[in-house]
Amino acid sequence: MRISQKKWDAYIEVQASGANMYDLDGVVMLNRKMSEIELTKKDCHYIMKNYGKLKEKFGIGGVNIDIRSIK
Image (cartoon, rainbow, N blue to C red; front, side, top):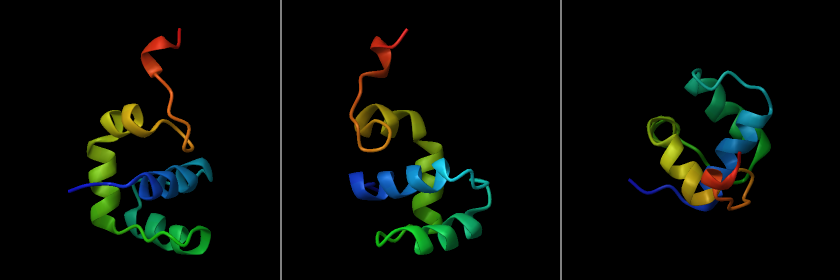
């Protein structure tokens, strides 16, 4: 499975809202209200399992940062 930058950003937007990210039905429903980018439960599950790798790839909020350089 591949997650795009847009899907990652949509997931981070829901996360930043303070939503319970373990409630995948709630995440998907809130995402529909917040974004034009569709997140599925499968997308969310994949993001959760691969969060660290995706965070390194995309950064947070669309800002690509090297988290290893932050002390």
